[in-house]
Image (cartoon, rainbow, N blue to C red; front, side, top):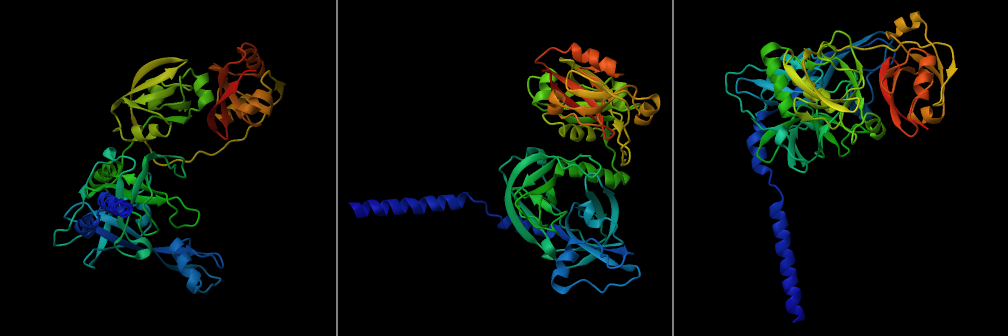
Length: 462
């Protein structure tokens, strides 16, 4: 009897293992069908180094130098070709290809290698830095294999996905994993964010950039673009551009050669627990407007500093980083509905969306003044008319020192306080009057200008 039970148990384990194996996806047919539409992209550009011993920044060259050492150093400028490797995929039978902008950026020559080892010279149709996308075109007499496009909006966290690309130049390498998150925000150097990235644990390395990310139906649902790494290699977190966003950009690049994005003209920040309480929200959510720029769609539409946008065109905003995604996808000139909370009241506005201009950089400005003390632990100073003109503000006081409740809220020396509890601050005396009227135990918002950027802070009144 004991032997019989052991046999039954062993048989059950075998069947369980077989059933478990059947549940794992088989990627072989997917790869056979779609690999021919994936391409390897290599580029040639020109790098110049005018300082003695300085080499061009290129991660793959640095890896190469580890084994063979850098080229000879000289005192005169070095001019030599720089090469990069990446991946892409074919969108149409007549030769349109989609890849990352950083794969072909500043390239003087772009070579596309197909699965049958043919090499074709590609023309750059258009590129978009903000989305990190580029459209290429190759000329061929034959119809090319194409990928099937899916909908990244329908993608669910936990779903199996597969990547095909050329990591480190190893063509048609296949890696698989799952979607670990959606809607990830990765701000650019200009502190902009117009792409809600798909996060996966698919192994992505240099050379995979621009390659397709497939679902189990063999549809492209993303473009592998970035990795999070301290070493330069894969560490379990990679990011892909959703195909829905990518095709909106690609279609504009093919037809117009440029991308038009919606724009409001505001600066926003995240709403934390304390700010939610101070603005009368039931929980932290939405995008808090810290500044409305002059002569912008936001100003014309009636948006104000301190408004918390909770919905845009009917889509709820949980985190402030979601607002640029929604606004950027609206065509310039179209009307949009904005639901917001102002002074604790829910209201709705309708405004015309403008067009986002070229990339800009805002410089910081100096801050100076005299002193005075307030109830919240603030030592403040008045500002002269000349200083306010330089700061481009109509009122405010400079923080000389902060302790107690102000320090706990994150107020720093050098901050310019412009509003407290929704009231303008034009002098230390006005600030003192406002502070004296604050109800004890309440959390109230304070708007400060820090390094030329407006920031809301939540202060707990002692």
